[in-house]
Length: 425
Image 1 (cartoon, rainbow, N blue to C red):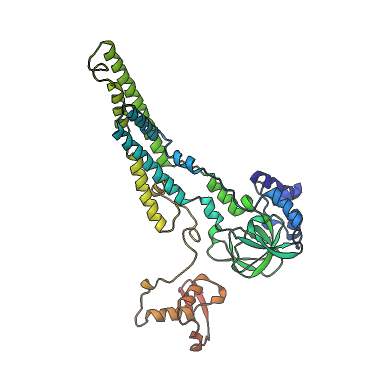
Image 2: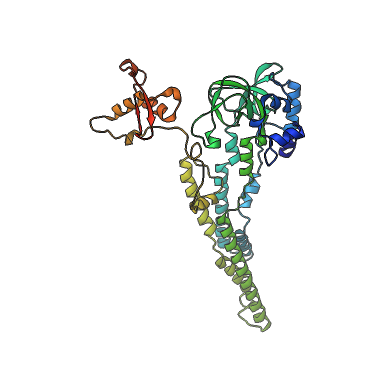
């Protein structure tokens, strides 16, 4: 679907336009396209689409949602038993049954199931990163259809739709703003920008960002996997899930398997030599001693409890992270992150909430000024109309912010000076 949709977007533009407004990977840079030219490329108008045209485009581009890969839960569970160490344990379990050694069989089976259950439970609890991204999408959108505005599910949006966004709305698709007053958009979770960005006519808005101020109409340019958010989700979904810890476990497992096979061959050769020389201590007297020795080699040659110990240890770490509202999509990623030396990431809106607050416990009074005095003076010197994050938090934290100007009159205001590090009111 993604490939077809991408070709369809490109077909809206003439070859010369594509050359002028596309990047190195063939994606149209809608922010650079003049507004009227963008409407022509999208084959739409400021009045929006008709219902019939919208249905045709929905069939062509697909729904405005990220693709979800359905994973069979049984296959997922059995996958935790499909690795070299588990293979050796499964062979040991089969040999235990052959020897009617039910105690060993029960123990080996218990360890296998315990390891698989822990990994399966944690993966189910973690969910999917794509699903987490989908949670940012708006459930409904106000769209112009057949000349009138309608509320429709966001997944029915198509390129060329004209919609209206206002304060508090989550932008449901990538779009280009039409004529109207400018709006402020919080796109910190996508770009890391700490403050809301002012968007006006001709600017581009990204799916998943939030309108913080104003109201404006816009035309949809990209939907689903072709949006900025969709491309990020696609990279997450196609990321290589084989981490360093899994590679180490596979290497250990392969080494154990090769060692076990080697000594099993040696054991069989010894058994055959003893049998050919009529050695009474082999086969004749002890029955299935050769098979029993092979079972000992298999059970003793592999770290039977290692997968279980690792799973339990990582599960404890996952549980601790879950209490801090961190989503662990794979147990092995805990070890991978712990082994990092340098982590490069956007902080604002990614590692933080982009919401400033005052830590009252660390608000230290100075000289004869109390903590309440500090909050009051901070609120008095704040210019909230500038929508600057520090001014807003200083003003909103003071309990008496609604009545303080009944006691004071502003005579002069000096903005923040980075040299003196002061704001004077």
